[in-house]
Length: 399
Ligand code: PLP
Image 1 (cartoon, rainbow, N blue to C red):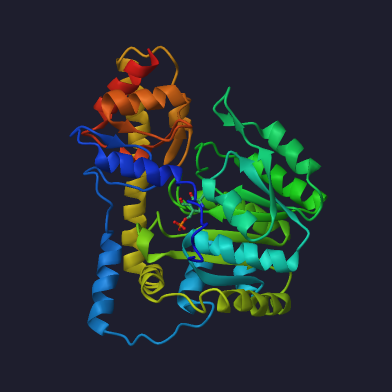
Image 2 (cartoon, protein in one colour):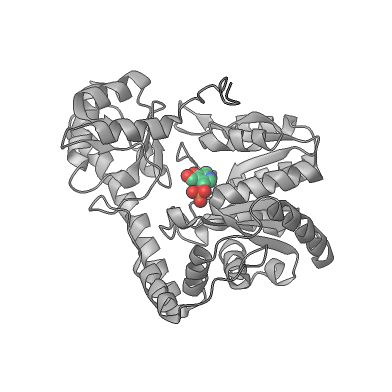
């Protein structure tokens, strides 16, 4: 018999299943709000002008394709540090921070998780309730037990901060705490600056290991404003991990450009940690691909291209904000009595709308509007042509 004869079918990924159903829907007016991707006002994934310019220059230079160092391109890694820790970061220039180029934010989380399993084999991992659906599976596959900490408050559609703090205070010392640095996925509910300071204090007093996941830097208020959590931990003197991604901020999803940064206590410690992280990488994929990182590094290290990118990033951020405001206004204009202004307060690409699974189902069946059954919608899938259709449909299903 075949060695695969008894293999069971794995459960379908709910979002991919949604995309397949959307693809098969023949209604012209259909809208997919289930995605985790930024679309422009024409409903297309943008190719940024800064990226285009850097790619053209690289194509003309026709560089050879040797192996990269295990940790990736130095100019890329320093560019990542510059964005995360700030332009004149003493922490970054001290040499205490290890940064490696990773295969997207997911790859960064996986390298970090595998390394942490070697460093702290008995630790447990805590993720927010709810969290990005891959966090749990990813840390479990690295061998960790994964628990939730309280996070979302359905009543206020914001953060249950008292609950979150209580969960963190109850976590055993040495636990790994995965924190969404900004633009929480899936809820859109973020901590305030003062609340971040409190989280830093709890991590310090309880001896917790923070792992910040930064997948949307620049999508809420701006590059530096969105780094407030990273900056608060940087100022604390604690050791912590940061996974970061350019999938969204550079619209380079398929190039798999991300990074893992580890803040250690000294330059000497950083050298030893890097040597161990390199062993993790070497046995996973050896070294990262060249193209995406080279493009990002070229943009970040050229003042003109960097300005171009920052302007384009601001454009994406402002378009999402405009869609938030417009959706709230249009729902009101459709006669919806319920206050949806929380959608404006939520940040990043997503909103937990509070729509029930039945209402989501009705949106799909009656209108061809697809969303995740939890009521999460992607604001970046709305545009000036589909938004009034969506607002009318939502108004219908909640009446
Ligand atoms: N972390 C969070 C919270 C995300 O939402 C995402 C992407 O959706 C990622 C990590 C992974 O990003 P990437 O596509 O770069 O692997």
